[in-house]
Image (cartoon, rainbow, N blue to C red; front, side):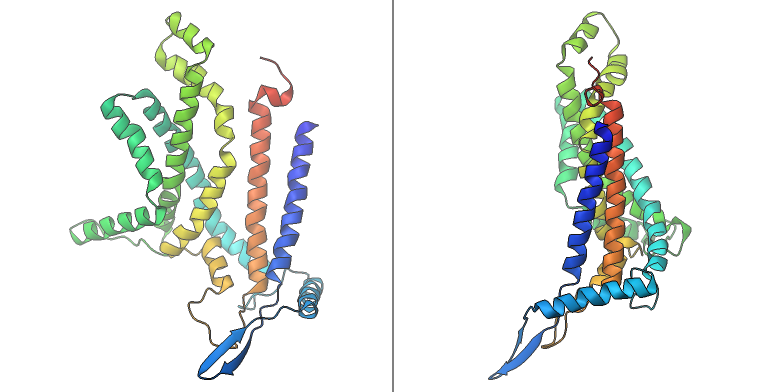
Length: 313
């Protein structure tokens, strides 16, 4: 019952956030301009009548077209959602799995190697990986590969999504930063668990360190690691925009950036237009994916943590 209430609570929160998102996207974006001397002055004036008209027109279109809307490419939003979802999910899921395995493995390495050199290559490298921005790491890898291809490395296409192997670079780039974050969380959780009395008892009985680590410490540290699942997923989704943009991979992130119409200059009087149906559709798609991740987190937390089920150790 407690689990169902948590799942239902997440759904209610999602509905509220979805409504707020739609209302924000439908805000009027018309501007006005006038001339003051030699200057063109642009101004924005919000009116409730225009706002109500935007809301009414959008939901009337949804009702008429039986769709979230028609994008600027004269395609139903659902058609584009299906296309770009398939492209992004094939890099998101492998990147999440890869970051979990690499992160836990790196965290175990950091925990087991606490010496001077071990701390340098262990926690030191983890700290460095978290400190360096992900876009810099992407630029660095792309530059190194470009130089290597000029000196004999077989040429490969690092950009776009035309080749079958184009997914591997985004997967690798997307998993780098979350892996370092998971490594830090894992190392901290193992060190906290190492201080428990049952671990000291097992060591006193002569149980091999390898068995203590993998069978007891890591297993009992899983509920603590699971608490960081959603922050990791959010990190993954935020990195998706950067990775898809820098690798020219046409997925959800790059399509949403295109729909928002980010511009570096605006002419006076020019409306701040966006592709409203696409922005709403792709934003809701991302929110649905986050809701599913939240439900998975709550279910795993319920199954792995005896306290959630009312079971006393």
